[in-house]
Image (cartoon, rainbow, N blue to C red; front, side, top):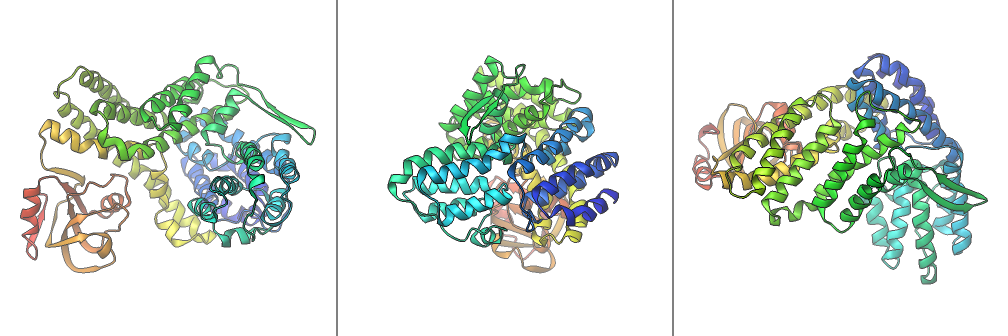
Amino acid sequence: GGSVDRICGAEPGATKSLMHRYNTGSDLLPGCRADGEAGLVAMAVWFRFMALRQLVWNNDYNVKPREISAAQLKCTEQLARVHRDDGSLRDVTRLIMATIGRGGDGDVGQRIRDEILAIQQTNRCKGGMMEEWHQKLHNNTSPDDVPICEALLKFIAADCDMGAYWDHLHSNGIDAKRMASYDRKICSEPSFVRDQYEGLTRDLKEYLRTLKAVHSGADLDSAAENVLGYHQDKCKGKEINVPPITEVATPRMRELLHSARGFRDVNEPLHSLEAMLEARRELWAWTRPGGSDNGRLKDIIYLDLALESAVRQVVEGSMGGMSSRAPVDVLKITGLALENLALSTGGNDELVICLREWTGIVATAMRGGNDWALHAKAITDRVQNALGDCSGRYIGALQATANEMGGKLGVDGHVLDIFSEEIVRGTAAAPLSQMLRALDPVLREMAHMGAWNIISPVCATGVVEVVDDLKGIQTKVFGVPTVLIVSRVGGEEDIPQGVVGVITPDMPDILSHVSVRARNEGCLFATVFDAGKLDEMQKMAGEGGGGPP
């Protein structure tokens, strides 16, 4: 469409530097907004391609960090206006803002240049990798500099273990080839001596604040500092004083953000999540459609985005211990994940109704007994259906545009194949889906429920084949319609060609790759909890069958 063509036409100029890209985004935004949701979706896809490193960030062009941060600021302030003024575009605007750093005026960006020089001088590390990084920072700083700084800190903390350095970079999508591809190449590995550790650790931690202030919009620590106010001492004669946003940085908000981060850092998910969601409620006056406004609305929205993302990180980090928590705690965490999604999503009437019901279920469960389990299962089924609808809505809005634009911009085919699924798994829907998966077997046992959970409700008939693991046969082509009885499904597999049904005792996440593919391809996908029924179906191997019975 029109917005896709305009964006693709502007791409050659945007490749010069991130400053050019953000300025191009600012220039294109009014036209995209005039095209409605389709136009903003096109911009979201374009910026997502950038964040995935599928587009060129810098092409032999020297740019000052303060010029990049000023371009970011111009772009994100426009987006903040859209977020407030047009509720129908709020969801997609949040997707765009999450891919862009907050940006800032003059000294915030300039400090990236000044501070790295001071670090080198103070800590006697003017050659090798540090000098190569210094040249990159001076000429074309980028979001990659945040994980590079973090990797150096991990390297020092591990007594200069090179494995710790590369492990962190690789986990953030950066390898030696990418580092060698920068206009100012980084080809050397770091090398420090022990008497440098203390000073470098102190200075690089402070420098990480500077980098995140420009590049990491949705980092909770950085976003919280930006709203509550912070100070950085003079560097080359310039100090940073970001004032608090007075009407937001109340004593209560300070307490909530302190608790959210403190409990997160000691791995206490329930208390951390309670503080995060109360903070999001406090911000709702500004983040809701048509909400309050002030000169720093953009910073408030970024704090809300950071809290939304932090909820996902806390839930994901605590899943391993969820089975040992008290059922009431699991109910509370599920409710907080549900509220997190409701605060981030438009058209959320069903989620709000379910949240109201869930609050009552938690209150009943806290009084003791098991009579709430059946009601809870009914609500989780409603929420699961809502999540399926949410996933379908995102995929329907994003995937066709991604395919069209990606084809024109030369985006990697695998990135395109899973593009919209990966976006869904990065939203507030993901932690809720994980909690439903953890809660389902508990509710079934307490409520003496039936044997089936249907993820993709399709009537399927085919020859039954029993396999141990879906991953091992996902590329196999079945010549006749086949119903697979699979002992293990991890969640990342594809549905093999010719398969019309998959039945498993495993329970994949409803937003997992295999669940999404099953729904999109019209393939039955179901979990069976009754070992006797599973055994009956396994004995049908080679026969014609269907499911669930």
